[in-house]
Image (cartoon, rainbow, N blue to C red; front, side, top):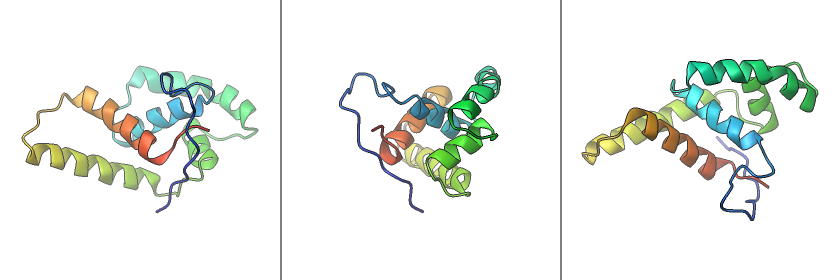
Length: 118
């Protein structure tokens, strides 16, 4: 599976500067692994009309991420497999992970490795 790469932003202190879509990709990853806070998910659903306006579509926020980044339709499966693999690696290394913090770090690492801002 190939996930498109974009050129990095020259502002390392604010990885979301100039491209708010990356923040939504983080939420997308958290949703894929079952770690998206329900309150945040409701906020994302509430933001759908604005996203639909920006991207001239009638899709859900998740579908917009998939479409805008040209993700394959099985991207959730890919993310979930990577999540399970990372958890297993941590367990093998006897590393104790705080679930919420690890989920957020995983989402950040996934986005950093697979999608970077222009």
